[in-house]
Image 1 (cartoon, helix red, strand yellow):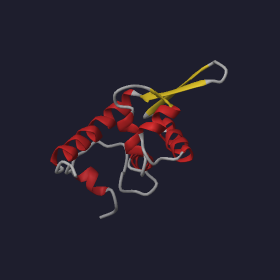
Image 2 (image 1 turned 30 degrees about the horizontal axis):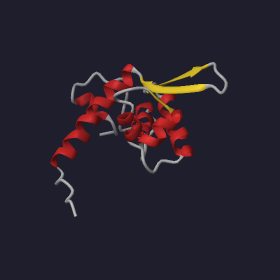
Image 3 (image 1 turned 45 degrees about the horizontal axis):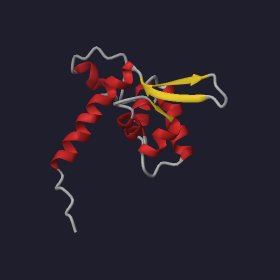
Image 4 (image 1 turned 90 degrees about the vertical axis):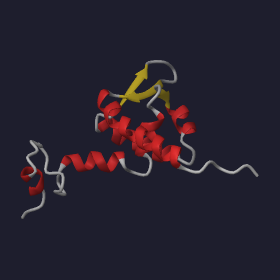
Length: 123
């Protein structure tokens, strides 16, 4: 059985062979599940944010990594980038409809994990 054949055998009408290394859907999944991709999507779930607001909402991310992650997520169609023609330009990021669809299960997962964790002890 060749890789990805299980998709067709399972009766799915998928356009992509997600088990193939050259599948474009794998790149999108890699960007979402990268070290910072999930956190960007979760941070943008409630409202649009400017670059520095987004950076401040995700502790530990460098400006370089945030810029790279945003660039990939914008290219994948998950995040939209809006530039206001001011001096200096104001750039705002928000989730596209696709980003909201993908981000909702991530938010649900995040909520389930945090609900199951033992609360931190007060010392």
